[in-house]
Amino acid sequence: MPTVYLVIPCYNEEAVLPETVKRLEEKLSAMIESGRADKASRMLLVDDGSRDKTWELIARFCDEKPLVSGIKLAHNRGHQNALLAGLMTARKYADCAISLDADLQDDIDVIDKFVDKFTQGCDVVYGVRNKRETDTFFKRATAQGFYKFMKVLGVDIVYNHADYRLMSRRALDALSEYRETNLFLRGIVPLIGYRHDYVYYDRHERFAGESKYPLKKMLSFAIDGITSFSVKPLRLISSLGILVSFLSVIGLLYALIAHFSGNTVSGWTAIVCSIWLLGGIQLLCLGVVGGYIGKIYSEVKARPRYLIEEFKK
Ligand code: UDP
Ligand code: MG
Figure 1 (cartoon, rainbow, N blue to C red):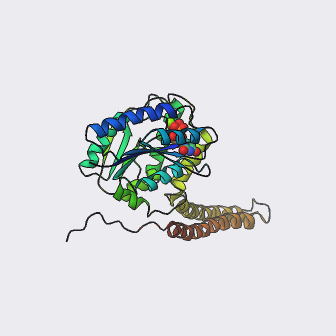
Figure 2: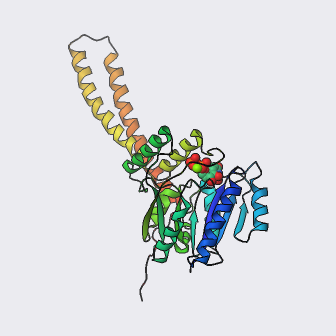
C-alpha cells in the first residue's frame, strides 16, 4: 500500500480551509480504510506567506487532526514555488504525492483513480479537465489560446491540465534535478518523461473565497511559461534580420533607379539605402547575439541532461 501525500498550496485561503480539510480528511480516511493508501498518508498544507489567518488555521488542524501536516513559507513565493516546497518535503515521506488547489475546484473523487494508476506502475498521472463550463468565457479562451500557443513554440505541455497531478517519489527525485528558479511545473513534468497516464475529471466552481490568480498574475505566469521553455522568440530575430536585409536589397535597387531617373532630392538615395541595409544588418547581428544568449540561458538552467528510466542487470 502506498503512502500518499496530498500537497495543497494555500494563499489567503481562510475562507475555504476548514471545509477543504474536512473533505480531504474524509477522503483520506476512506482510502486508508479501503486499503488503497497506507495509514502514514497525509495532507500537507503549504502556507504561501498568507496575510490572513491561514497559518493559524493550519497550525490548529495539525494539532487536532492526525492526518494533517503543515509547512509555512516565510514569504509569498507564488503558487508554483509553494507547490514545489510541498512536493520536495513530501518526497521524503511519501511513495507518491498528489498536488491540488485549496479551493477543491478539481474533483477529489478521482484521487482513487490517480492512486490506482500509480499502483499499476505509472510515475506521473495528469488530471485533465473534460470541459471548462465553470470558467468564465474570458478565462477559458485565454487559457486554451495559451496551450495552443505553447504548442506552436514547441513546448510540450498537456492540454487542459493544470497542476492537479500525481507524481511518484522517483518522479519527484527527477524533478528535484531541475534547478531553475523561474518555475513552470507544467512544462517541466512532461520533460521528465517516465511512464505516465491521464485521468479525466470535471472542474467545479470555487466554493468560497476569491481566485488568487488575478489577470496580472495569470499574464506573468504565461510569460514565464514561454520564456522558461522556448528560445524561439530569440530565433525569430535572426529570421526578421534576414527578411529585412532581403527587402533592403530591393529597396536599394528601387532607390538607385529613382536616383538615375533623376526624380529624387540629392542625398535621399544614400540615406534610404543606409537605413535599410543597416537595419537589416543590425537585426541579423542581434539574432547572432540572441543565439548565444539562448545557449547561456539553457546552460544556466543546468537541467539534467538525462534521466535513467530503467536499468536491467
Ligand atoms: N496560491 C498560492 N500562492 C499564490 C497564489 C495562489 O499558493 O500566490 C494557491 C491558492 O491558494 C490555490 C491555488 O494556488 O490553492 C490556485 O489558486 P486559485 O484557485 O485562486 O486559482 P484559479 O483556480 O482561479 O486559477
Ligand atoms: Mg481555483
